[in-house]
Length: 361
Ligand SMILES: Nc1ncnc2c1ncn2[C@@H]1O[C@H](COP(=O)(O)OP(=O)(O)OP(=O)(O)O)[C@@H](O)[C@H]1O
Image 1: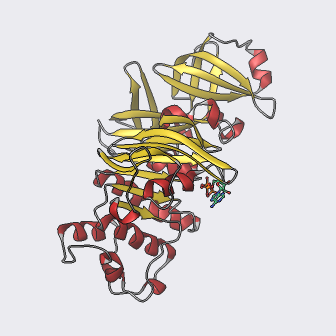
Image 2: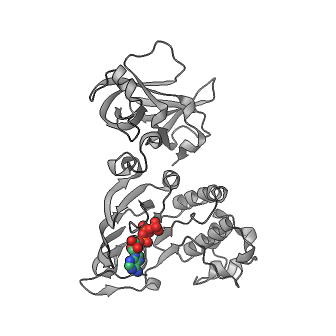
Image 3: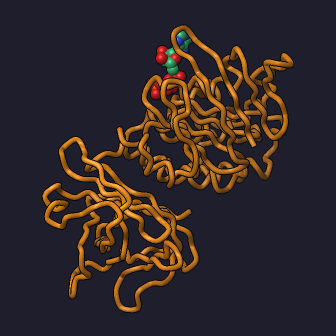
């Protein structure tokens, strides 16, 4: 586990945060530009020193202002992947990968990493001949080959265009499952968080405003600037229950009493999935409709209602054990005379869940 507590100022900017990162999985660091994301991971890497604090990785102290411990970056055993791949142009891909690696033979780890990142065929090429996505895969491979206790990634996809980002995401996702090390992942992208992160830390002006499981943070008030109105959505975790016998649909269990139908997933019963349900795809009725094209009609209760910037209503609902957002017009709210604590029926079109709205966990 990584334990961090940092209190320091750089000019006008002060970083004051304390948090723990679980032993495995991806923890996303998210926040506005200038909120201190890069400064934070640079402190952990040892590229910056704080005025006060403690950084402990798997029980080993990397930094302790009280006892004067300050390990330089090369003694911390931390891998760092930057926005730009930073490869040595005069070395081949193989030489880049093995730079700084003690065991330079074709180890099992080397084979695993080149397969996982699909860079076997690039080994004899020079970085200048690679695409942006290929270069970044090599940079990730190089960081992993040093067998780090922690991997820091600072917007590793930011310099890539959208198709390259999409190409690299599955590699990152596989890597986080395959390597049992904590990954701290700085990003501006909510899509990357949905695809990759298990946990999330929200930073604002150098302070942590929220941290915890992604599903929980997603719905919190501090996420409102990024997820308001039309862009409001909920993240839910569930398990594949069954596939429909006649139609290309899959049922996902969210809790003991709640399940949803969505277009067929190529997954087996029992597999875990994360779903994003857009608030615009969730409508409400007072009575159970008698016949409807909508496949998911579930009982829910209104927890709270908020007016968005366009004077429409964001309704937060309790759906079984989960929280769900619905976005409706103020007109509909008045027409149905909706109030907090009311019991309603929540309607989610099965077809509204597209392939960008789920990942297997
Ligand atoms: N050497 C420095 N001296 C003074 N202020 C600095 C220094 N380095 C960074 N800062 C300030 O610290 C704040 C946090 O910067 P940082 O790069 O950590 O933010 P960030 O959240 O990573 O931003 P972005 O998302 O734009 O990369 C900024 O206001 C920045 O101007």
